[in-house]
Amino acid sequence: MTEYSEMLVIDAKLSEEFLKGRESFLIDLVERVYRARHAGNTVCPDSYFLRFPGAPRDRIIALPSYINDQACVSGIKWISSFPENVDHGLQRASAVIVLNNTDNGYAYAFIEASRISAARTAASAALAVRVLHGAPTSIGVVGSGPIAQTTLHFVKSLYTAAVPVKIHDLNSELVARMVTRRGPECSVVSLEEALGCDLVLLATNAGTPYVPMSVRFQPNQLILNISLRDLHPESIKTANNVFDDVEHCLKANTTPHLLEQLNGNRDFVTGTLAEFICSEKQLDPDRPTVFSPFGLGILDLAVAQSLYEHVQASGGGLRVPDFHGDMKR
Image (cartoon, rainbow, N blue to C red; front, side, top):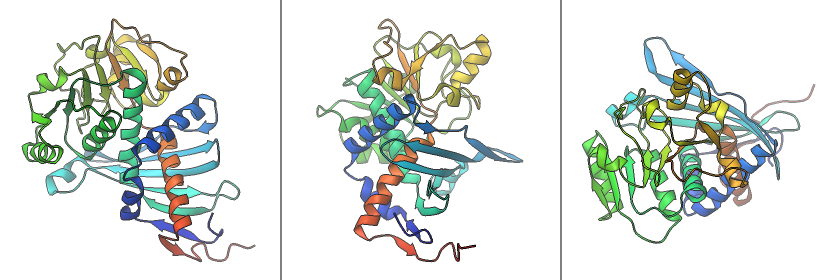
């Protein structure tokens, strides 16, 4: 670790270089963190949403967390979501992570985290595919932004066989770019056709459900409900509903939260991904499965700490030697 007074600043380029080619490592790391949470070795408070008067879709979210597993790590991710950024040629989300020393609370790393956020989201989704579904025969992708692209990349890293990828997005320019980048296995399709694949990835910036209430998924399907607000609650009512964390996900008018309000109970909850990792729960094979990950700060923290250790060992990053000034009293 850096000296108590030193701050290590890690930019997007270093983060991207570290993440590239480490898909398997990151998926396994996410599994380890889920196991640690299941064992009670993490602290992951509710996320705090900063919202702005007159701009209900814009928000900045604070995700503080702590892991006491193979090492003690604490910190916070501060991630913004401004959907209209895409209309101006900017990515919707930006993020930073601050890591804090667990002995004295002083911050020791300041990290650009939008790539970390995308990678941990993708790794969590890929882990869900590995645990809940297995190799897909077709992949439907709704959305074509960074989260959709990164998640598709991580899922495909699990398996060697090529499968058709069917992409739907209202933004024709973005989806055309994604199809070009992914190659001949990809095609642009209708929403209905994308939703008919045995593995469906939902990664949009929708604030309210738009998928028709009449849509009913089939028993062989796994729905990666990453954007959380695409589906009408009736669409998941009879599914195996698996979460990264139930309490975190059943808030902020996510589809599962809407279903809880509609039902007046949580009887639709099947379990957490960690319970399936630990073989404590089983899926009902006669139902489709919906994985709804709210996104836990402990995942960001674990990836950020691994990145920090790599950059620290290599001598990279920007070091501010007296960041905290005189700390004695």
